[in-house]
Image 1 (cartoon, rainbow, N blue to C red):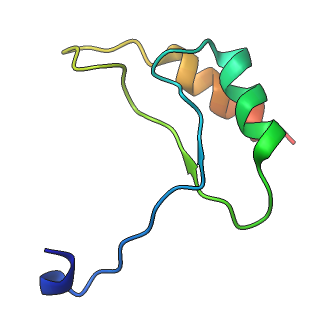
Image 2: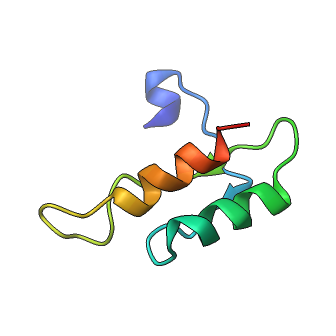
Amino acid sequence: MQRRLGLQGVMWSIIGRDWKLPAAEIAATVLSRVKAGDIICLHDGRGTLENPDIAESVEAVRRIFRR
């Protein structure tokens, strides 16, 4: 499908494991490994819940990008 649409695929270089960790651990995981040019993979929900609680992921983003 990518070729058909003329798109280029990319992959992440750091995964925050935000589907199972609290915000502080997500941020620590990312910040301990990140370097210029990395692509950070975070999620907008946990599991397949209809209305997932994304508070931990949102708080992790605040902690990661506060610098």
